[in-house]
Structures are given as structure tokens and as C-alpha cells.
Image 1 (tube, rainbow, N blue to C red):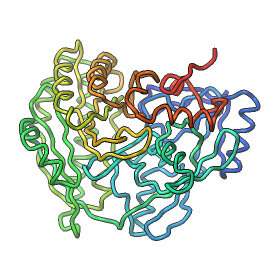
Image 2: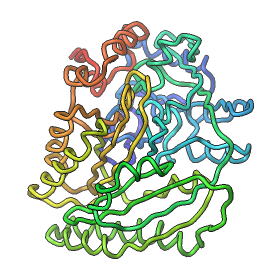
Image 3: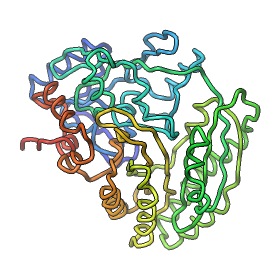
Image 4: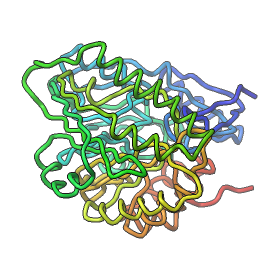
Length: 434
């Protein structure tokens, strides 16, 4: 047996029978055929930034670290190997005068992991990262290499852009990028009431808008990111270190550890934190604004909701937080995305508002997560595939209009369920044999 694998948060572990590091699709195909012949299941892993057990296996773990290079750049179309981390992708794109149209706030994931789980940023005009995919290549359970796009195998393309690792192993993706651009970031504390009174304007009048609510307070941190022509207000190095490294990581991590030991102080810490925040406005290349370092470890649940349901879900969440027998140490993040047509995308067929809830590692979270999930599910919420949830296939089939089509595609490409594990068995069915 190999050494154990653990995800970034440390809440998921597994020990595979062996680990493979293929360098080409053909090598990967041979790995898959051999595993199938031995009766071993296979899961590909990225950087472990999913909070679910989607990548866990006791069979063959496939790591794509040798498939992480740039393939080609053709105008604004960029093809990369699927194991490339987003941080490296951003650097590669910048070197060619290009950028991703939008990003989430973490860049540690591989591009394959980010796409497969529906990773997203915020912005009313932007879908999840998978909407930027023009074509992709994957290796199926039988070792075949399949390519798809909107015109080549369009049904597979609609399914594979968010696939939870159930259809095969992604080996390369072609992304439609944009010319590199600068963002002006405006971040400032505000009363929660100001968010609700101007929410439609905040969403419509900013390229990218989000806010963080501090539990046990009526305060938020609003973030507005908008495109500008030039970087005319770079953030001083000392201010970036102070805000993003020292306060957001070192000090916040210490506060979380203190609150985990002495829960009674958490509401006071949250109120002080909300009031202590200062406004800042700066300009920088887009990826430097979108992505920030995250060194304080946590577990997370996130739900995409119909935008009209946001206020009801948020008010319900506040009631949950107030009634828990333990304290919530992390702010709640709220973001917005556009509709898309990807079968298992959280934004399939509708504009979404996302509510992300977190808890510091080692602190209790299950009652918090389950109680919020009950509220979100009743409001037609869809769980983020890379973040914790307790839904099963019967429940999820009610939330996704093309859910049964995706399962049929999975059964066609992987009839022996080579890529199954307990997570996919729960979320897609059927149960694994004992």
C-alpha cells in the first residue's frame, strides 16, 4: 500500500493500492486498462482543494503532475494539460498577454479539478470557470481518448465540463481567454443593511461584486472589482503583506485557534474584526486581485441558489448561526454568477447567488452545515461539487434538469464504474457492491 493521501483541509484521507504518474494519454490509458483488469477502481487527484471525498480511492490514484504543461497558444485559445495548477496557468497566460475572464479566490487547484467541480468566481455576466472551456480531451475507462467541443460530441461536452471525475480522466483543456486586464479593487466595511438596500445595483453596476458577513454582527465587507485601463494605484507591498498575509492569515489563524479553545469569545472577536477592517482601493493585474493566499485551514459548504431566494436563505442562515450550540468563527461569503447550459453546473439554466459557509479545522461544523443545507435545499439550492454536502442521487436528481442524462452518459462511458467511489455512489448512484 502507498502512503496515505489527504486533502488540503485534512478532513478527507485515503490510502491507494498504488499511485500512477502518467505522462501521456496513452500511458494513462494503459494505467486504466491494467487497473480494470485487476478489479481496482481509479480516481484522479488534483491539488486536494475539494472538501469532499470525490478523489478518494483505495485502488489506483492517478496524479497528473507530469501532465501539467502548456500545449499551444492560438490567439485567445490556450490549450494546457489538465494537471496544471491555476497559479501556473495564470502565470503562463500573463506571459502571453492573456488572462482568464474570471477566477475564484484560490489558485491552488489544478485546472481539471477546478472545472470538474464547477469552481466559480463572482460577477453577474460570468458563469463558472467551465463556461470558458472551448474543447477538452479525456481518457475513458476503456483507455480510449475522446475529444469534445460544442461541435464535436456536443452532448459529451455538455456533460464533461463539470463531471465530478465520473466520466473519465481529463488530460487537456482548451480555454477561451481574453487579453490581460487590470482590475480596480474596492474593499470596504459596511452595514449589512446597505447591501440589501442596494443589492441589485451592486450586482449590475460592478463587473465583480461579493460580500462577507461576520457572524453575530450586522456588518459586512463588500468587494467590488471593476476593469480599468491601467494600473494607476498599485497596492504598496507593506499593505499587501499587512492585509493578506499578516491580518488575513497569521492574526486570523491565531484568533481562530483561540476561539476554538475558548468558544465564548468568538462573537466578541467577530464584532471586533468587523469594526477593525479598513477600506482599501488598489489596481493590479486581474489574477492578483481575484486570488488571495489562504493559509488558515477550514472546511466549507457552498450552495448555489436562485438569485431571488438569496435573502430568505441568508436570513435563515442567520437564525441557524444564532441557535447553534457552538460558535461560527469564519465569515460567510456571498457571490453571484450567470446562467449556463452545462448539465451538472450549479448555474445550469439560472442566474445564481452563492452562499459559502466555513468552519475552522478542528471546530464542530456538522450541525451548522446540515441545518443550512436543509434551508438551501428547500429553496432549490444546488451544492458545490467540491465542497461538503450531504445530498444523495435521489435528492440531486430533483435539482438538476439533466441529472439523469449525465448518469446515462456516465454509464455509457464507464459501464463497470471504474471511476466510482463512495462519494460518486452516493451522489450519482447506484450503491457500490459490498
